[in-house]
Image (tube, rainbow over all chains, first blue to last red; front, side, top):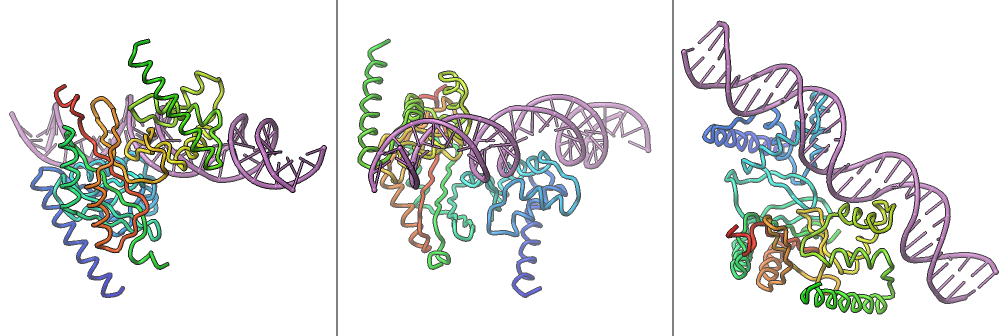
Length: 154
Length: 154
DNA sequence: GAGGAAAATGTTATAATATAACCTTTGCGA
DNA sequence: TCGCAAAGGTTATATTATAACATTTTCCTC
């Protein structure tokens, strides 16, 4: 195992501990399945589909059925620990533990990397536009598909 | 039939004629199935799912199978006559015949109405953000979910 | 610690969305 | 008219997601 991976693991463990604490504050439980799925999602910069996660769980613990995964995903979505990427039907970790914020995804169709951004300018432009037509926004879905800096030259 | 509907029908026919002309210019064919599906999509301000369209076609012409609908949808998407709404897995008419432009959808979760907008401010904010990180955008997905002006008071 | 409600999970079945693969028909230019 | 390319038909199946009900676990109350 290389230094980088070691750091990454440390980072993951710390992040999970923080999430654990947040759950405690909120009076909700980060159970074994929920925690494991969150870990799996967080170990990647790509979004995973529900059935990708299902396969990974099955490899670890034998029989697992779709509702198990979807229920855990629902919980993690509710708590704001992951996001759903609509244009991929897939799920990705959210670096911020707060429940609802306006984010944007930059999805590289080359390498699959999905980057989460929080651009104040974009958020403001969206809110201005909604306000102009009296539309009350509940959820802002912004997904930019294309090629990341690393893949443009490929 | 009321005046409004009559106007609407006229408008639809004119729009279809324009699309027909565009197809001719591009050397592609607006066949019977394609035209009918486009009509069906255009008669609504709500997005239709592929299987909604399938059911409507079946009601008109008996047996129709999914690939028929999906192929027509692919054609209409390619030509830019309709858009796919990712967060609904559904399709909606595009008032502009040009192939690729940056649009935003305002989706009312109350009445289902999906409004297409072209807000220059939003587009610019998205492009600025992408440029800042060297991301080459191919497609901009912007879907705002919430309540339209008419449904806020409901 | 026993009882019981609420939460979580297990289990079975199926719904909803989408495409692969191969075959037939149609349109159209050589 | 031949033959190719595009379109559509047909069958089967992949992928994504949820409904409904049974069982287990948690944890609060007494």
